[in-house]
Image (cartoon, rainbow, N blue to C red):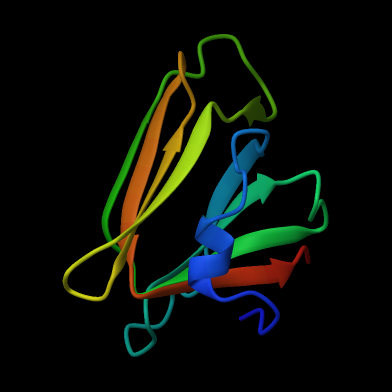
Length: 112
């Protein structure tokens, strides 16, 4: 996880100009590890970093790629602190759809 910016500081960044390039599970082969996901969201300020989310739950992907290939601009990305101390993350890709999830922790990691 990135030690430079806390989840709260990351949540306060302007994510409306992010570019969604995809997502990838990091540890789907190990049932003992925390479910972790990389969201490939390129921000102009951090173009070589991805959003690494740990302890994923309620992961919903509702996208209509139609004839698109590659990435798509994000209309908005919102972060909501839950009462359970988890975070809700929603990537609004209108008019193409939405990605939403809850996670225990998140941070920026270098693009591999």
